[in-house]
Length: 117
Image 1 (cartoon, rainbow, N blue to C red):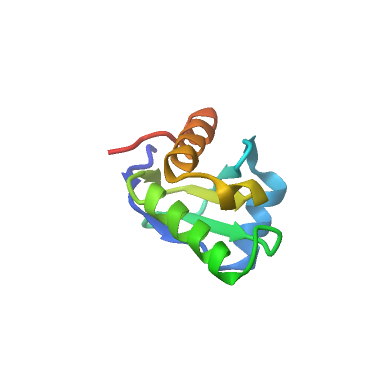
Image 2: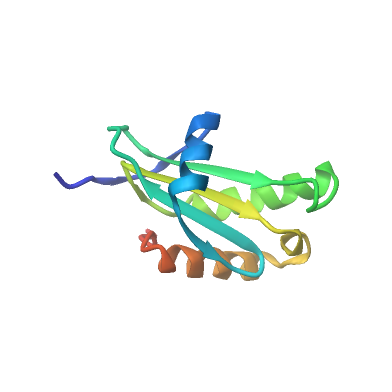
């Protein structure tokens, strides 16, 4: 059965984060780390979780990085059985939007998640 590609939902449950962190494939860059796993549970959409720790900076800087990542990934389509976690590294705070976008594109390509429309 093929899984159709759709827009994504936000991942909110700790159980989903733990599943991706412990069982997912990892692609690490200078600015972010992307983890992805294919889940057997049928879901109407793929889910993405974004993690920005206090190591990145204060609340304003963390929210800026989070908003940039959300803006970049809004153009991606995910399989309905795909769970993705994006972890921002401290270097992401000083990165330009285009550098962060290129990093996400490269990490998604390594994990074969690079369908962008």
